[in-house]
Each structure stands twice: as C-alpha cells, then as structure tokens.
Length: 243
Image 1: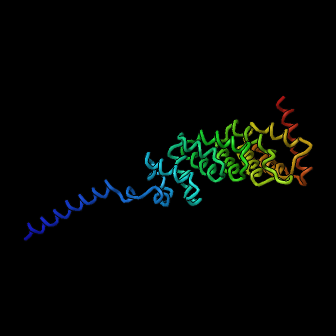
Image 2: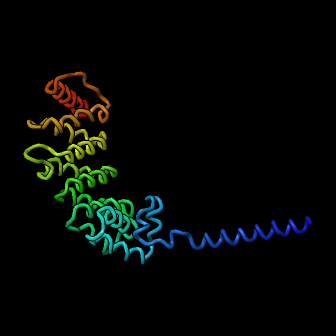
C-alpha cells in the first residue's frame, strides 16, 4: 500500500512538471493579438511586442485612423521603444498628428536616448504642438550637458512659446530646466542675464531662485530691484578678487 501511495505521488509530481513546462513554453500572452497585448500593463506590454510580426501589426494600428486614439498612441510608443531605427518610428516622428509625434518621442526615449535627444531639440525649436515641445523639454532636462543648456537657452524667447505676448507653460519648464541644471561654471552667464535692462518676471524668478545654490552665497534683500543690485554688486566683488 505504501509503495502504491509513493507511486501516485511520483506520477503527480512528474505530471505537474510536464504541465508546468508546457505552460512555460506556450504562455497565454503568446496567443493574444497585438491589439490585445496593447492592453497589458506597460511593464509587460513592451516585452510582449518585440517580434517582426508585432512590428507589422503595430504599424497598421498606429497609422490607421479607424483605431482608437489610445490604441494608436500605445502602438506608436511600443514601435519607437522596441524598433527605434525603423521606418515606422521615423514616420511617427514626422507624422502630421501631434499625438503620434508625442508618442513616438516618448517611446524613443526608452529605446534610444541619444536619438530621442536629437529629435527633442528639433521639436523644441519648431514643433507646433505645445504638448510635444513640453515632452521635448522633459527629455532634454535629463541630460544636463553644455549642449543641452545651449539648446534650452536658445528657446527661452522662441515665439512658439508665447501666445498674445504671454508666456506659455513650456517656457516656464524651459527656465526651470536651465536653472535646475546650472552649476558654478554657469555663473558668468547667469549674471549677464541678470544685468540686462529687460528681464521678465518669469525669467528673473527662476534665475534668482537658482543663484544661492549655484554660487553658495545668499542675499537677504527685497524687493527685486534691491536684490538684483545686491547680486550684481557681489559679482563685481568676486571678479575683483579673482583678478
């Protein structure tokens, strides 16, 4: 009887092993369509759509207006992440619809950061979509290099970032990014900006907030004109000491 029971247990273990192996070799998500896989959580979605077959299916979804906006957006993001150098990715980056360009850029950031920064710089300079330009600022701000700072500074007063003479939120994002990544080597440029006759309140706000951190010095003076004068006086003293 004991031998019989052991045999049953052994058969069960072996059977369970084969069942597990079968499931492992043919997981449920492999039987799902590309459209179904787009509904998976993002942590699984990208891994589930890496094949050439997936690429073809996703391309059909991303560029077909018969599909829902969300489906097209997710399709484009997956393409750009998993196939960053593909024709479909480039098509998405140049697409006439802003949400496709936005999705392509955000997906590309995960698939090829260097390419994403190049496209972000292009978008920030001339893309008509405020959403796309905002995404571009976010991507560029994660790479605090001299080149990035130069690109951001060049777009502070970009006409696209104003409406009826008033700055849009993307300009605030640009200024925040510039001064958050500023270091002591940027002090001459910051002081040059502060010394200009005309500097708008939005710009001066972020500049003055960054100066204590960057310089290691603090100024206890208000209002703005007095604070500006105090910083410029301090800067003249620093230059005199270093001569």
